[in-house]
Image (cartoon, rainbow, N blue to C red; front, side, top):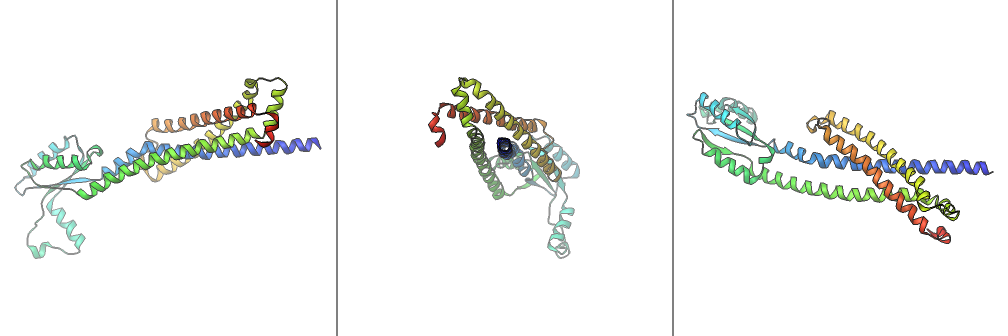
Length: 293
């Protein structure tokens, strides 16, 4: 009878440990995803910003040689990421294709102008900086007009600021939830052994001696959960890197190392603290209070 009861207790204990490890792994996985999202938020924002272009229209009198000279000059500017020259002939073909008819036939001439699209570095994609860039470009004698989508820049800047703010808020919220969930799981694990803790204390064992095995057990559960979370994160990042190579998830090893190290440290620290305070609570309880804790 006693052996079957012990077997039942062992199975129950293993099931409890398994639940704790899975809970820790899921929470740490969530923290890892949010951590990578925070680290990548600037790069994601930069990716969208660098799709924005300022279009510089050239005067009709500007020769191909002068155009090349202007391109070389613009390429040296600190705000320039890439350039693309578009001749008025090619622009006419694109426009004709868009409207579905050759507008040159009834106009008799090509009213379009040669242009250069300047794709800016992300640091310079903001309403104020782009106004300064536009004014600088208009001072060039080869340039007749400079345009860009001002409402889009305003909207892009505002949305990026809002998204960045909410990412931080959500990350902080889930970090708090993670601490509470892991702490709850560890406390339930320790709670099942509260009578063992009190028995050891009654026979003269010190608090430090009693806490030791529980702390080590909690740390092992935390590390096991961290390992499972890291494996899950590795598969997720590999999958995302295959389908969204522009995110360059595997290109920056320091960011990956920071995320995985953060997951292990978080798992270790939270489980250690949770186990310490959970055991301390039961160590400080009186025997009759164990039945109501």
